[in-house]
Length: 342
Image (cartoon, rainbow, N blue to C red; front, side):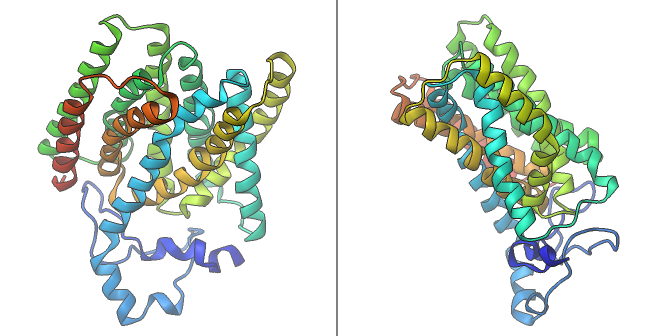
């Protein structure tokens, strides 16, 4: 398979896979099952230099990749707010997925990637339902009535829901310290959100809470699949799987929702399609494959705080006074969870 001989697809060989029930990483590259479509190691990955690198850097590289994914995701809500200036919510969601599929499908075709094995398609369907359709749609509907700063702090609960979903799905058992720090971080986020909304959940909050559940399922399955397929192929095939729905949805949405394109609307849509929907998920899934779903998900505790910064710089929203204190508390929780071992 030519795709799996490429530099892009062969990267996962050098990434260590966490042992079952542990949030640490192994000290040697994970073996590749004979039935997996993961690439075969190339000569360049078997030398002494690469072996030393594999021993010393997989965890740090996984954290870096996951952090890049969080940085990309932190721009999602501001980009959505920009896109909503020129088009309806259904148009935004469907067009972003169709455009991302053009990029992902083109890459799959250029590298002649073989269709995944049948055993992977159920997981890909969960990824498609969670991160291609469910989360974008629910959060976009929420942003019709909520500010990006409010939505950001509510979605700050995503790390905890992802860690819980991962534990149920994979049987992983993070340590008590890990869970304590996660719950403290979630409590900070909830308190911040309640203070912002005046203590009364809105219709937008209900959309956001539903988005947390479907996205956590999609992240968990994507992280699991990224141990067998390169991360870009995981999201690529999920986008392709959802294409019939997104194309039909885009056609209907464009026929019933008004379209008034401007610079903000076009820029926001392009970032949603290529930054949030594809490139961000590529590095995010590879990071989760390297350091584990639960540990990687805790990096997202920083996402709402980054989004708050973008909402001020890009949208002119007023930064809530409690944001600095929340930032320090959440970053402290991240430091604890990244040091914890399950």
